[in-house]
Image (cartoon, rainbow, N blue to C red; front, side, top):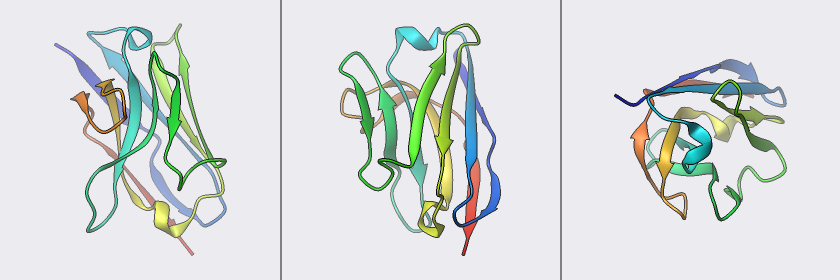
Amino acid sequence: AVQVVESGGGSVQAGESLRLSCTASGLVLRNYGVGWFRQRPGKEREGVSCINWIGTYYADSVKGRFTISIDNAKNTLYLQMNSLKPEDTAMYYCAAGTFADCSGSNYWGQGTQVTVSS
């Protein structure tokens, strides 16, 4: 069975950084479109960043602050989040088998909470 598991969330002050990690079992991340999504309070889940055969996508709200990467040897996906803002507060989800436009995915993790205080 496919399983993706996130880690690395937490509570930080505005301007600080966090790195989220996602490990996968049952699939090889580099063979799939993969990405990070988030659901902010009162909002629908949205694509934050995805990597696929087309290229790399970042939501406008995180461009220049967040960086997505894959360590193929570890089969692990990362999201480096710098200059965090209170509006980045959300549950962050790792996804594999993402849609080409980063609008959804086939496999989801359980989520990791990120809270940014001002």
